[in-house]
Amino acid sequence: MRSFYSLLNRFRRDQRGNIAVIFGIACIPLISAVGCAIDYSEATRMKAKLQSAADAAAVASISQQSPGWLAASNMTSNGEVTVAETAATNIFNGNITGANNTLFTLNAKQTTATVTKTGPNLTSTVTFSANVPVTFMKVVGFSQLTVSGSSSASATLPLYIDFYVALDVSASMGLPSTSSPNGGEAKRLQSISPDNYVQYPSGCTLACHFAQPPLNNLKSGACIDPSPNTPTGATPTQKYPTGNYCLGYDISRVSQSAYALLLSNNGGKLPTYKYTPKTAPAPPAVQVAQPAAFYSVNPLAPNDPILTPVTSCPTAGTDACIQLRLDAVGVALNATQAVNGVDGLFATAINPLYAQVPQQFRIGLYPFITAMDTNYAPLTYSINASSTTPGTINYAAQNLAMELDTNSNSNLGSGGTHIDVALHTLNGVITSVGDGSSPTSTQPYIFLITDGAQDPQSKGVPNGNWSGSNHAVTLGDASNTYPNICTTIKNRGIMISVLNIPYQPINPVNASFANDEDDYANNNILGPPGPGIQKSLDNCASPPDSQGVGYSYTANTPTDITNALKAMFQHALMTAHITH
Image 1 (cartoon, rainbow, N blue to C red):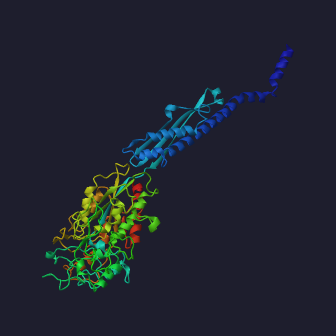
Image 2 (image 1 turned 90 degrees about the vertical axis):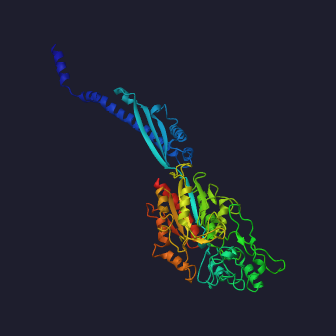
Image 3 (image 1 turned 120 degrees about the vertical axis):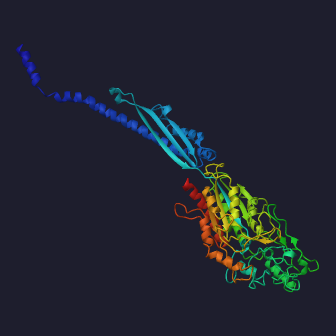
């Protein structure tokens, strides 16, 4: 018995195995902690994989030109985009293929893709939930870990914009396109035009005088032959007899050398057989025929040249014609980089850099004088036709100078420049103002192209009497019929971008002409008493954008006009996206 107690005491006092025992006891929580860390690390790795798949699915499902993005672009109302949701689900599942049901199991009800269109904005959200099986944590009662997350992406849809191009085709837009002290189109026209020579012996520069004044109304701004052909009671105005017809426009449409030869062959004047107006080549159906005074040839005068008119003059300085301002505007609308070095409005609007979806932009041309012709070239998606094909907007632009005021088009009126009336009419044409989010909710922009010379007078068409004041004012003047029309339009949410092709001061001034119309016109350019043309057009344009860039542009040359129209389009598209 004593030996047993001695052995027991020795065992009690012996501490050499304590560490092993303590280690054995401590291994249980230690191994559990390491196991939990391993299981948690694996769950975190799986979550990262799922998060990456969700990120890719959210972005790719609404990426530009994706099926979901295109489907949303054509939706006419807000709501879910099921095509994009299906794509997001497929992309998500494709990115996790091979891992599902082995390293984790998706919770189907909590793994969703939602893509929503709200106006021009598109939002994609992909959420996921999955169970990751565990190994070591089973010892503490866990069989799996649940991981979850979400990813969102957004995109701006292409904006559908309608461009209403209001085109001033009044008399002053018939000025030559270029002017310089020693040359330019203005000098060419001055040197050969017989019109109003008595009042302006240095040469008249307007190429849009009324072509067929009736003999009983010759005192009302007509071109009147000098003696002995001067009608009773009339005052001569012409440099040489023209049959009492104004020829500025007609001369600008024919070969300059041929016309000079015609005069030379007939003692420096038109032969009498040319006096009877003839009809120029048939114009397009949407335009009005312009009278022409000298396009026929007398078979008894075989040495006289045949004068074949053009309907437009796309290039300055050529013998075939004299380019007018409206010719230059037409060129700017149709310009292409290949021919002109820079794209004009039409080519810019179909450039894939800007036109992201088919039929994204519509453009219409709306010329005006004292009234606006809303049927000239209404809004259309077809802006890439040939400029030589009648009936297209490209043809209408190319031949815009044929709409100049020759007192022959009742749709446009005649005699003055009623910008306020034109904008009022266009405001009525724009029946709805959308946010640009769909083809049925287009955002309207007005491009006003003018020299800004608001002239309240009118002349009856054809060849009627004059009425109203010929003292020029500016857009916004209280004497206008619609002095606040720009504000009215902008308050509807319609953007206005203005291109001012500056009215050139008249020099020399003839104060006796039409109750001193020259001085009133010159004062209208700079002011006072009014704010001046540029200021009035600045006020009409929409306020500057958030970057301080304004919507008022100025162009003096054909190249300037082309560049300005492209800049106006780019600015409209950029600020439309920023706004939304």
